[in-house]
Length: 265
Image 1 (cartoon, rainbow, N blue to C red):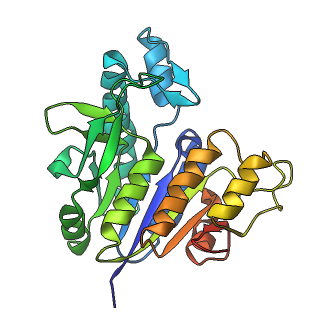
Image 2: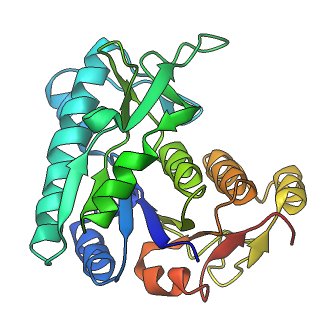
Image 3: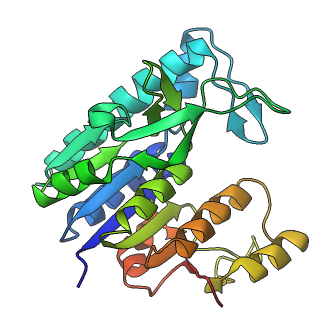
């Protein structure tokens, strides 16, 4: 039987709220067994960037990463946010180790090609971009990797990479040898049919239902790429993929909360 590993991704909405982050880290630290935490950046980079006179640029909710912004996010995501989270986990007797994709050649990516939009120094992870052997070695040693949303291109350049995508790629790489549960934590209890009713959770979503929900406008904006990442993971041997509220982490892991993404409904 394959060894189990839990991969949890948390977004900026949790990182930006000290109370929510403390509660989440309490729950995460208490989970037994091999686990990995992947985190987004939150608003810290934007706030520090404003102090430095850097105005953020976005297209369809995605940050444009020029040279100055790359320096900023490398400093904030890979340094301030990541190391504070690692220190918080250590205080909870969780032996965490903070990493970017450059550390140990863990996640290599290529700079996104310029098409309609030039996203700048944004990295897309290839099919063989994840060093799963390194991650497995860390997990076997009892370490808990805490991974910032930064990759590298192998030629000395850091790249800003979407944390949802990074979580998916890590999950899919480990799924070839391990039984992987992938949990996307965000500010909703799951995928809601009615945004104004937090109890209107859609319990299971496959590709066909996802297409219907997009057509009907139930799924839009930033939820589209999040669900696309989750569905792709479900199609690539990841045994369980769930999205839901960070405050319900234990329920999400147990399959008793959130929305499960599947190949078939």
